[in-house]
Image (cartoon, rainbow, N blue to C red; front, top):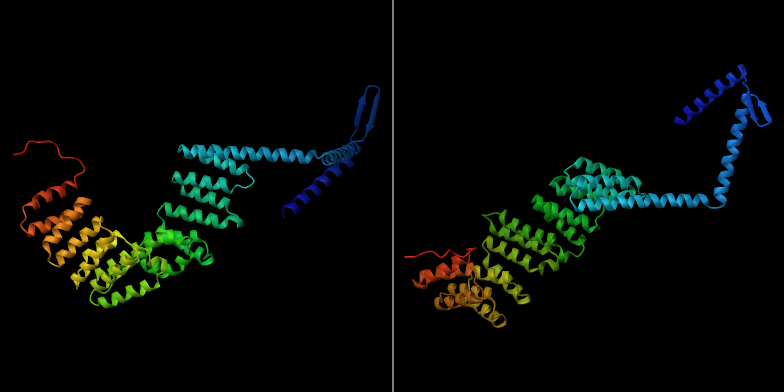
Length: 404
């Protein structure tokens, strides 16, 4: 449409000039020293156009023949690139000094000069976000988006939402991205983190089998381990308090879906055992803990083993004594042995194990357990150990004051 209008405008202008020349052709005189040239204005204009056209063509030929055009173009491109990089460097330096406003201006200048504006616009987005200017940050993302970097821009947008606490928007976008790209680990990781923040445990449980396959190096993924742990706790908390067998079945079924490497993670085993204990199935937890400790030593599992109610405390105590041969300097195991001795009503042995545990590590929980036992034994040392235990909670030494 614009080209058509321009053509009509030139035709109209040409018609007007032609009519003017017909009315009055004009007169041009060119004089130099003793020579003069006379011609009509129409001829002078035509000659001027011809000379200008020939000059431009000749200049183009000369520039192309000697490579001058390429050199000039290269120099201009290098200069533009240098200015873009310089602006980007200045912006990064300003960002490091938390001067986000000036940094944003530098990044925008760099984006306007650069051939590839994507890095500069991303930096400008971060600078705007630091100023809580979320709309400007979004505008920069829109300007930077191309078919080649669409995924990177969308992930950056998601991070903006996450950083600003817009978890619902982040989850919605990540679900769409994950539907189209199930092999991208970062999408799966961010989706899992966002669902954990929203505490959408039902969705977490439904997506975990697929997400665990997608996330790269899942063995080291803290989010994945946390998701399994929190899901186990949620199942125990929301289970049927009347029909605890049904809740146990839900826990077992979910445990069966866990990948092998997750089942071998002792923190996840701890959460599973804790969930089973919470619904009252201590014996099942005892077997799980005992088998797991036989495969890998874990202080958390040892401590939990001492907390459960054992139907056969004598046998459980014997298992713990066998572990003591391999871990004689474990304060946690000594605490557990003291508790198992209490379940077997072996009060002197329990007292001895608590004392040994405190000798290795002065733990507040061990002090509390020991003092409770001493009080029920009417042992005069109870007060001494109570004070010692309380001192573990004091962050500063008590002042030197007169005492009665």
